[in-house]
Amino acid sequence: MAKQYVTTIVNGDNVEVLCDPTQTLLDVLRDEMDMTGTKEGCGTGDCGACSVTLDGVLVCSCLVLGIEANGKKVETIEGMAQGEELHPLQRKFIDHVALQCGICTPGLLIASKALLEENPDPTEEEIRYWLAGNLCRCTGYHKIIEAVQDAAAEMRGN
Image (tube, rainbow, N blue to C red):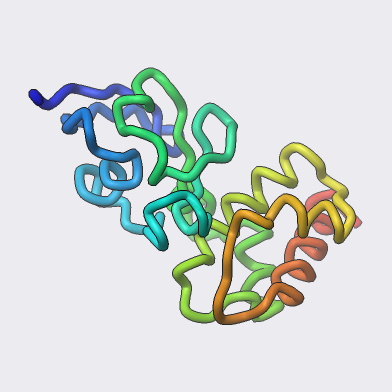
């Protein structure tokens, strides 16, 4: 198949990229845009390591074709910090030592951000439910939950 141009907004920047129609959004981000923060864990949508938002909806980028991003807004881990200033979730993940190897961390951060944008004051149960699609084999989840709760409180001004 012939490559196709995809015009999208990635982390607030207008982007035009030439991609194969069979390439996943994950592969387009990593291979064509050199945005390697989004990780591939399983390639089947089971682990959440490749989580991004597409028009504000949390998706596994390994399950979305790159051409499906045409005309849409994509947010990745690279767009989470504002310059040198980390997003509160990123700071709280560090403060609570809610990361280890780093494979799952970008997906957990994007998923947590999507949660807090929808629900700024989630219960522990709601956080666990929301992050159920993001697997971590290193840390367990207790510190991750605490980090999300702490970031949520800070973002609410508590």
